Length: 184
Length: 202
Image (cartoon, rainbow over all chains, first blue to last red; front, side, top):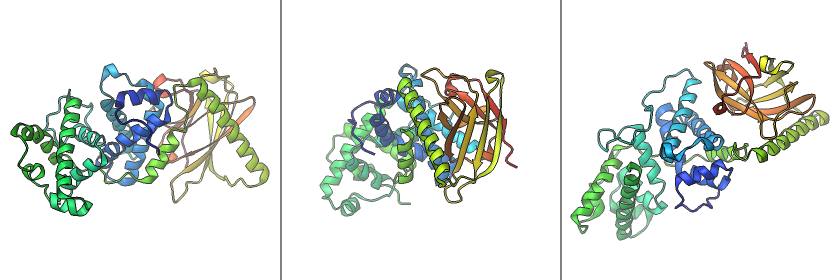
């Protein structure tokens, strides 16, 4: 897929363009949300094959139903979350299995600590990560989910230690801004 | 799994205190959410690429033209396959759809192919006739119903005069649904079923 769409474009605007049949916008939306969708599906469905199917159905539903998105009713991220949640439930229902853990609605009031395990909070963090430049996202993922020290990351990526520190600070700062914006 | 380094180690010791405090919140978030998938499977990307080839709902006139063209291509391909002897479709079972009061005189048969052992895909051939003419910006869809609700689409199509044959491929296990239904449009538009049949693959 080509990503010919400026990354600065809002999710909301992208969905509006998808509603008009714009495939470039759809591709960019997929780039931004594929990992959050797949992550949620994997947690709820438990196996790669079904999670992939649910993710596929999510984006099929986005393509079909983008026109139903109303910005005044909520954020684009919340709308996508709801679409993904429905697709995951549908996929589980086909196996006659109950789906647990997926909240009814994306709550904009989710707190940072006590709701940290919540699907919506995880969704927001994963979606925000996708908006970081790849070089910043990589160092944050290696630090937080692989437990690598800054020195180990520098060695792994074959970049100077100072570069790793700069990318970490910049990435965290940018991520902080993105998540504040989502909460707002 | 190893714990992530402390925030102080990540940031170094030369950041202003207020900036460190600002980043402490996002640091806590990252420590408390699971890792995102490392990679997106190429198979998913390829499948989603195909999604955008399906008719979008908005440019309806353009979509109708695309659907008509798609139906024509499908019909031609199907006919050509039959004619050339290259057609390998073999129905495992058939389902006869009965017209509802919304489409009296219409009829359809779905021929369900064998499930591909490797991919799980099932090929469908829908023979349909007698459906009412469509508005230029409308289309038909073959749906799978579960718990009385539209559950999954098998594909969209337009019809011509006489009998129309449409080929579709789905990744669902058809036998897990309760009924077929043909409607116009999308479930969001609350369509009434025009043709329907219980699924009894036996």
